[in-house]
Length: 266
Image 1 (tube, rainbow, N blue to C red):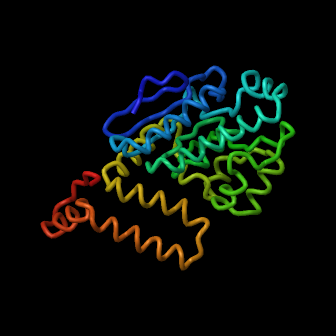
Image 2: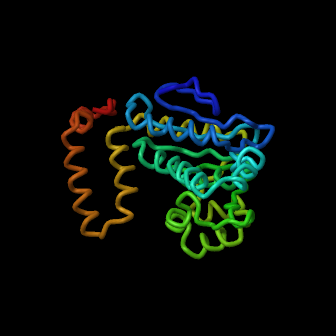
Protein backbone atom coordinates (compact mmCIF):
# COMPACT_ATOMS: atom_id res chain seq x y z
CA UNK A 1 0.00 0.00 0.00
CA UNK A 2 1.08 3.56 -0.71
CA UNK A 3 2.42 5.59 2.17
CA UNK A 4 3.46 8.56 0.02
CA UNK A 5 -0.04 10.01 0.19
CA UNK A 6 -0.48 13.69 -0.55
CA UNK A 7 -3.64 14.69 1.28
CA UNK A 8 -3.45 12.63 4.47
CA UNK A 9 -0.72 10.97 6.49
CA UNK A 10 -0.22 7.22 6.17
CA UNK A 11 2.16 5.02 8.13
CA UNK A 12 2.34 1.23 7.93
CA UNK A 13 4.09 -0.87 10.55
CA UNK A 14 3.66 -4.53 11.52
CA UNK A 15 0.68 -4.93 9.21
CA UNK A 16 -1.16 -1.95 10.70
CA UNK A 17 -1.85 1.17 8.62
CA UNK A 18 -2.44 4.41 10.51
CA UNK A 19 -4.16 7.22 8.62
CA UNK A 20 -4.58 10.80 9.81
CA UNK A 21 -5.96 13.85 8.10
CA UNK A 22 -3.23 16.44 8.25
CA UNK A 23 -4.68 19.91 8.63
CA UNK A 24 -4.73 20.21 12.43
CA UNK A 25 -4.87 24.01 12.29
CA UNK A 26 -8.36 23.67 10.72
CA UNK A 27 -9.40 20.64 12.79
CA UNK A 28 -8.64 18.35 9.83
CA UNK A 29 -11.33 19.16 7.26
CA UNK A 30 -11.80 17.17 4.09
CA UNK A 31 -11.28 18.58 0.60
CA UNK A 32 -12.22 17.32 -2.85
CA UNK A 33 -8.70 15.91 -3.19
CA UNK A 34 -8.58 14.20 0.21
CA UNK A 35 -11.97 12.57 -0.39
CA UNK A 36 -10.74 11.18 -3.70
CA UNK A 37 -7.37 10.04 -2.37
CA UNK A 38 -8.95 8.29 0.62
CA UNK A 39 -11.45 6.58 -1.68
CA UNK A 40 -8.68 5.35 -3.97
CA UNK A 41 -6.50 4.24 -1.04
CA UNK A 42 -9.28 2.08 0.46
CA UNK A 43 -10.15 0.68 -2.96
CA UNK A 44 -6.53 -0.39 -3.42
CA UNK A 45 -6.51 -1.91 0.07
CA UNK A 46 -8.93 -4.61 -1.07
CA UNK A 47 -6.12 -6.01 -3.23
CA UNK A 48 -3.36 -5.81 -0.61
CA UNK A 49 -3.01 -8.56 1.99
CA UNK A 50 -0.03 -6.96 3.72
CA UNK A 51 -2.26 -4.57 5.71
CA UNK A 52 -4.23 -6.51 8.30
CA UNK A 53 -5.86 -3.62 10.18
CA UNK A 54 -6.33 0.12 9.73
CA UNK A 55 -6.43 2.82 12.39
CA UNK A 56 -8.03 6.09 11.26
CA UNK A 57 -6.63 8.38 13.91
CA UNK A 58 -6.89 11.94 15.13
CA UNK A 59 -4.38 14.75 14.70
CA UNK A 60 -3.80 17.78 16.89
CA UNK A 61 -6.61 16.89 19.29
CA UNK A 62 -9.32 16.50 16.62
CA UNK A 63 -10.56 13.77 14.29
CA UNK A 64 -12.23 15.61 11.40
CA UNK A 65 -14.34 18.75 11.04
CA UNK A 66 -16.12 17.53 7.90
CA UNK A 67 -16.05 19.17 4.49
CA UNK A 68 -13.96 22.31 4.35
CA UNK A 69 -16.25 25.35 4.27
CA UNK A 70 -14.09 27.29 1.81
CA UNK A 71 -12.66 24.44 -0.27
CA UNK A 72 -15.87 22.39 -0.60
CA UNK A 73 -19.08 24.05 0.58
CA UNK A 74 -18.44 27.37 -1.16
CA UNK A 75 -17.67 25.79 -4.56
CA UNK A 76 -20.69 23.46 -4.25
CA UNK A 77 -23.05 26.43 -4.28
CA UNK A 78 -21.84 27.28 -7.78
CA UNK A 79 -21.96 23.80 -9.35
CA UNK A 80 -24.46 22.34 -11.79
CA UNK A 81 -26.66 19.39 -10.81
CA UNK A 82 -24.44 17.03 -12.80
CA UNK A 83 -21.35 18.26 -10.96
CA UNK A 84 -23.10 18.05 -7.59
CA UNK A 85 -24.18 14.47 -8.22
CA UNK A 86 -20.63 13.53 -9.21
CA UNK A 87 -19.44 14.95 -5.88
CA UNK A 88 -22.07 13.25 -3.70
CA UNK A 89 -21.42 9.95 -5.47
CA UNK A 90 -17.70 10.37 -4.82
CA UNK A 91 -18.26 10.90 -1.10
CA UNK A 92 -20.49 7.84 -1.01
CA UNK A 93 -17.81 5.89 -2.84
CA UNK A 94 -15.44 6.55 0.07
CA UNK A 95 -17.89 4.80 2.42
CA UNK A 96 -18.34 1.96 -0.08
CA UNK A 97 -14.56 1.57 -0.32
CA UNK A 98 -14.22 1.46 3.47
CA UNK A 99 -16.96 -1.14 3.76
CA UNK A 100 -15.67 -3.17 0.82
CA UNK A 101 -11.93 -3.19 1.51
CA UNK A 102 -12.08 -6.43 3.52
CA UNK A 103 -9.84 -5.04 6.28
CA UNK A 104 -11.07 -4.08 9.77
CA UNK A 105 -10.95 -0.32 10.35
CA UNK A 106 -10.71 1.28 13.80
CA UNK A 107 -11.66 4.95 14.21
CA UNK A 108 -9.79 6.66 17.04
CA UNK A 109 -11.54 9.99 17.61
CA UNK A 110 -10.54 12.90 19.78
CA UNK A 111 -12.20 16.30 19.83
CA UNK A 112 -14.21 17.33 16.78
CA UNK A 113 -15.77 14.46 14.81
CA UNK A 114 -18.51 16.04 12.73
CA UNK A 115 -20.13 15.98 9.31
CA UNK A 116 -18.21 13.72 6.97
CA UNK A 117 -15.82 13.04 9.86
CA UNK A 118 -18.70 11.49 11.79
CA UNK A 119 -19.52 9.45 8.68
CA UNK A 120 -15.93 8.13 8.50
CA UNK A 121 -16.19 7.06 12.12
CA UNK A 122 -19.60 5.50 11.43
CA UNK A 123 -18.23 3.58 8.43
CA UNK A 124 -15.39 2.13 10.50
CA UNK A 125 -15.81 -1.31 12.04
CA UNK A 126 -14.80 -0.33 15.56
CA UNK A 127 -14.74 3.07 17.23
CA UNK A 128 -12.73 4.34 20.19
CA UNK A 129 -13.01 7.91 21.46
CA UNK A 130 -11.85 10.22 24.20
CA UNK A 131 -14.25 11.88 26.67
CA UNK A 132 -13.63 15.09 24.70
CA UNK A 133 -14.97 13.66 21.44
CA UNK A 134 -17.88 15.67 20.06
CA UNK A 135 -19.83 14.02 17.26
CA UNK A 136 -22.47 15.64 15.07
CA UNK A 137 -24.10 14.93 11.73
CA UNK A 138 -24.31 18.58 10.70
CA UNK A 139 -25.97 18.29 7.30
CA UNK A 140 -29.30 19.92 8.24
CA UNK A 141 -27.36 22.78 9.85
CA UNK A 142 -26.20 23.80 6.37
CA UNK A 143 -29.60 23.37 4.72
CA UNK A 144 -29.14 19.78 3.54
CA UNK A 145 -30.79 16.47 4.38
CA UNK A 146 -29.49 14.13 7.05
CA UNK A 147 -29.31 11.34 4.46
CA UNK A 148 -25.66 11.75 3.53
CA UNK A 149 -23.10 9.05 2.65
CA UNK A 150 -25.32 6.25 3.96
CA UNK A 151 -26.16 7.82 7.33
CA UNK A 152 -29.86 6.97 7.21
CA UNK A 153 -29.05 3.33 6.53
CA UNK A 154 -26.09 2.82 8.85
CA UNK A 155 -26.57 5.06 11.88
CA UNK A 156 -29.92 3.52 12.95
CA UNK A 157 -28.32 0.09 12.89
CA UNK A 158 -25.62 1.31 15.28
CA UNK A 159 -27.56 3.42 17.76
CA UNK A 160 -31.25 2.78 16.98
CA UNK A 161 -33.82 4.49 14.81
CA UNK A 162 -35.05 7.09 17.30
CA UNK A 163 -31.61 8.22 18.41
CA UNK A 164 -30.37 8.37 14.83
CA UNK A 165 -33.43 10.37 13.77
CA UNK A 166 -32.79 12.92 16.52
CA UNK A 167 -29.17 13.44 15.52
CA UNK A 168 -29.90 13.55 11.79
CA UNK A 169 -32.88 15.94 12.08
CA UNK A 170 -31.35 18.36 14.58
CA UNK A 171 -27.63 18.16 13.79
CA UNK A 172 -26.98 18.43 17.51
CA UNK A 173 -23.78 17.24 19.12
CA UNK A 174 -23.67 13.76 20.62
CA UNK A 175 -21.42 13.78 23.67
CA UNK A 176 -18.81 11.07 24.11
CA UNK A 177 -20.77 9.68 27.07
CA UNK A 178 -23.96 9.48 25.00
CA UNK A 179 -22.08 7.85 22.15
CA UNK A 180 -20.64 5.20 24.46
CA UNK A 181 -24.00 4.52 26.14
CA UNK A 182 -25.73 4.26 22.76
CA UNK A 183 -23.14 1.92 21.27
CA UNK A 184 -21.63 4.32 18.75
CA UNK A 185 -18.29 4.21 20.59
CA UNK A 186 -16.99 0.82 21.65
CA UNK A 187 -15.25 2.49 24.57
CA UNK A 188 -13.83 5.77 25.84
CA UNK A 189 -10.20 6.23 26.86
CA UNK A 190 -8.21 9.27 28.04
CA UNK A 191 -6.72 11.33 25.24
CA UNK A 192 -3.18 10.39 26.26
CA UNK A 193 -4.08 6.71 25.80
CA UNK A 194 -6.07 6.96 22.55
CA UNK A 195 -3.32 6.07 20.08
CA UNK A 196 -2.06 3.17 22.20
CA UNK A 197 -5.57 1.81 22.74
CA UNK A 198 -6.32 1.89 19.02
CA UNK A 199 -2.95 0.38 18.18
CA UNK A 200 -3.36 -2.40 20.74
CA UNK A 201 -6.78 -3.30 19.33
CA UNK A 202 -5.43 -3.19 15.79
CA UNK A 203 -2.51 -5.43 16.79
CA UNK A 204 -4.90 -7.93 18.34
CA UNK A 205 -6.90 -8.02 15.11
CA UNK A 206 -3.78 -8.17 12.94
CA UNK A 207 -2.56 -11.21 14.87
CA UNK A 208 -5.72 -13.09 14.01
CA UNK A 209 -6.78 -14.87 10.81
CA UNK A 210 -7.07 -11.96 8.39
CA UNK A 211 -8.88 -14.07 5.76
CA UNK A 212 -11.41 -14.91 8.45
CA UNK A 213 -11.62 -11.22 9.40
CA UNK A 214 -12.24 -10.32 5.77
CA UNK A 215 -15.08 -12.84 5.66
CA UNK A 216 -16.52 -11.50 8.92
CA UNK A 217 -16.49 -7.94 7.59
CA UNK A 218 -18.05 -9.06 4.31
CA UNK A 219 -20.88 -10.87 6.04
CA UNK A 220 -21.53 -8.07 8.53
CA UNK A 221 -22.16 -5.77 5.58
CA UNK A 222 -23.95 -8.15 3.22
CA UNK A 223 -26.35 -9.57 5.79
CA UNK A 224 -28.08 -6.21 6.26
CA UNK A 225 -30.16 -6.97 3.17
CA UNK A 226 -30.69 -10.71 3.78
CA UNK A 227 -33.49 -12.62 5.43
CA UNK A 228 -32.50 -14.75 8.42
CA UNK A 229 -32.64 -17.91 6.30
CA UNK A 230 -30.43 -16.31 3.65
CA UNK A 231 -27.99 -15.09 6.29
CA UNK A 232 -27.68 -18.53 7.89
CA UNK A 233 -27.01 -20.12 4.51
CA UNK A 234 -24.51 -17.41 3.54
CA UNK A 235 -22.66 -17.92 6.81
CA UNK A 236 -22.63 -21.69 6.27
CA UNK A 237 -20.93 -21.15 2.93
CA UNK A 238 -18.52 -18.56 4.33
CA UNK A 239 -17.50 -20.78 7.23
CA UNK A 240 -17.01 -23.78 4.96
CA UNK A 241 -14.65 -21.68 2.86
CA UNK A 242 -12.73 -20.63 5.98
CA UNK A 243 -12.45 -24.28 7.02
CA UNK A 244 -10.35 -24.87 3.90
CA UNK A 245 -7.71 -22.35 4.94
CA UNK A 246 -4.31 -23.24 6.31
CA UNK A 247 -5.03 -20.96 9.26
CA UNK A 248 -7.85 -23.30 10.34
CA UNK A 249 -5.46 -26.26 10.26
CA UNK A 250 -2.81 -24.26 12.12
CA UNK A 251 -5.31 -23.39 14.83
CA UNK A 252 -6.22 -27.05 15.32
CA UNK A 253 -2.60 -28.17 15.41
CA UNK A 254 -1.69 -25.41 17.87
CA UNK A 255 -4.63 -26.30 20.08
CA UNK A 256 -3.65 -29.96 20.06
CA UNK A 257 -0.09 -28.99 21.01
CA UNK A 258 -1.36 -26.53 23.66
CA UNK A 259 0.33 -23.66 21.81
CA UNK A 260 -0.88 -20.31 20.51
CA UNK A 261 -1.58 -20.39 16.75
CA UNK A 262 0.44 -18.13 14.44
CA UNK A 263 -1.98 -17.10 11.72
CA UNK A 264 -0.61 -16.28 8.26
CA UNK A 265 -3.78 -15.38 6.38
CA UNK A 266 -3.81 -18.31 3.97
